[in-house]
Length: 107
Image (cartoon, rainbow, N blue to C red):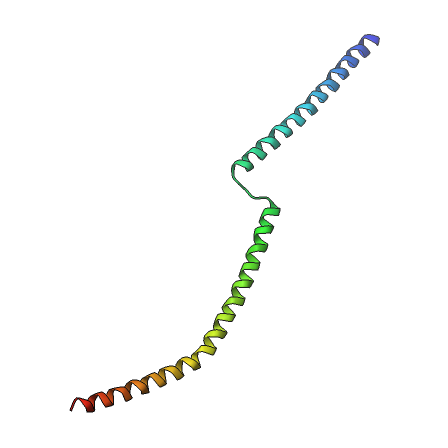
């Protein structure tokens, strides 16, 4: 039985070593795959989550400022319309008054 145990012990030792080698290979494969993926992502110029969030916040702020400026422009245009109507009415009546004396002086 000692011989049989020796063979089983050797086989057991061989299997244990094989498992250790397999686990080591697994770790090396994981590291290799991880570094390959990191290189691939770096080559694609993807942005990080932090960079994306910073640009997103800037875009939201710019959109809000744009809306505020649009509202301000609309208010200024609305306030300028009555003044512009009054000016065109006055200038039209001034032009017609200027044409009448010119026509009389020509006779």
